[in-house]
Length: 145
Image 1: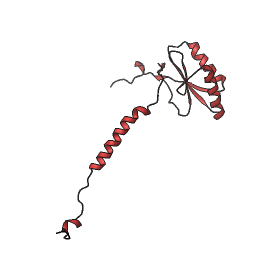
Image 2: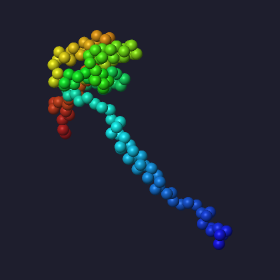
Image 3: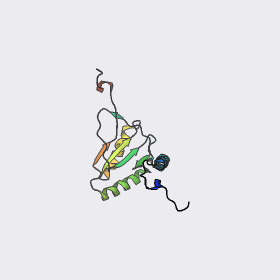
Image 4: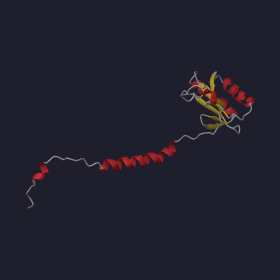
C-alpha cells in the first residue's frame, strides 16, 4: 500500500558507507601524484666539492651558482656577471643583512671561484658561505661492533 510505513525506517544505522570517502581519497592522491612533478623546482646540476664537516643550510639566503660550463645563476635564474652585480646590490638594498650561499662546480679553476667571491663581496654582501656536500671519509665512519 502506498501510505503504509514499515517499522525499519526508525532503526539506527549500524554501518557507515566508506565508499565515497575512499573514492575522494583516491582522486586526491592521483591529483597530488600528477601535480607533484610540476611543483619540483628546476635545479642546476653542480658537482659540489666534499668536506667532512659542513653546517646546515639556512633558509632565506640568496643562492649564487657557477656550473661546470661557467654559467652563473642567481636564485636559480641564469645571469651574466653584470646582472649578478645588479641583483646582489638590489637584494642588499632590500635587506642589509643579506647573506649568500655560493655553489661552484669542483672542476672549476680556483681563480674563477675566487673571482665570483670578489664579485659578491664587491656588492657589499660580506657574509657568505661556500656550499659543499658532506663527505663521510672511511676513517670518520663509526666502527662496526
